[in-house]
Image 1 (cartoon, rainbow, N blue to C red):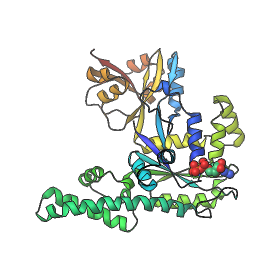
Image 2 (image 1 turned 90 degrees about the horizontal axis):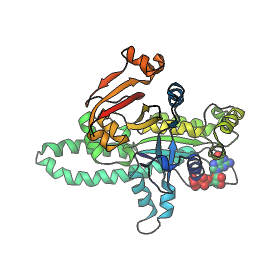
Image 3 (image 1 turned 90 degrees about the vertical axis):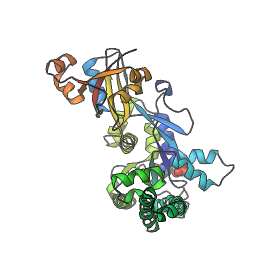
Image 4 (image 1 turned 180 degrees about the vertical axis):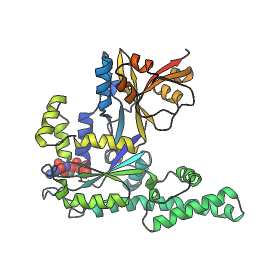
Length: 365
Ligand code: GDP
């Protein structure tokens, strides 16, 4: 399963946020595909469409979809033997599919800041530089291997060398790999290098509990926003402390608490949604009398693979998928009417599944 890693300097609020994630977290029993590991938090994806489908179909049970966050600091603390902390940190980032970079934007004299003062940009740069240097090393080593072959006019080596050189030039100017532009062909080469700075990132600005409402007044948040827009990255503002309080509440209490605070959606819910998109994930639904359920898929996959997410037999014996878009189904008001209106399509093996598809798979057993 795809996972997003939570990273950041010490004392910025990572553990507080991660605790909120596990507190609010989903029962892993519902999600047999998810990892059981104290450093992995399973979160349910908030999705209004699931609620609407439930009202329409009135099933016995409704199951949201879920995905995973990995607490990288937690893993690094837990494994202190062998290589240095730095290398462990990097090797764990290598294993995640996207990065949630937590930045301290709250002032609290009681909580020491590692570099003595709150300075979100310098914090971000400290970590980003670490990642860039690691990638620079990867690329430099690779250049040494490919150069010889490129000199002998090996076509593939020449193409790779060009990519590597572009990357190295970027790194030397402290540009992450994701900021360098490549052609489709070149992108494939970049992918094969498994670079840390090629991963998508979003910044989580952790503000004080009393600053949630007017984050525009928080100059630290402004600085993070400016920085992130250069990195074409999203910024999610949370108060980790508040989130850990919200996480202890159930549905109705949570809604009341949010109303009291004057916010529509908890920071954690925003973070979950943004991370889901960052990972390139989307949702399709199954909607039967027994169960209405959301399923996570990686954008771009075809119908049989989507069926395989439910069960491998569905993929092996795939015949076709009865498919209606969420909007069409909601418009029609029932599956029956959607069918009469010709909105229910029969899709085959080559169909590329779309976010919001409501699907019913036909398969051979
Ligand atoms: P980590 O080292 O990044 O995992 O940071 P922690 O989550 O352990 O937080 C470090 C300290 O900052 C703890 O004492 C937290 O209670 C405190 N902290 C975290 N978030 C907030 C916040 O939003 N406001 C305030 N005042 N303190 C916070």
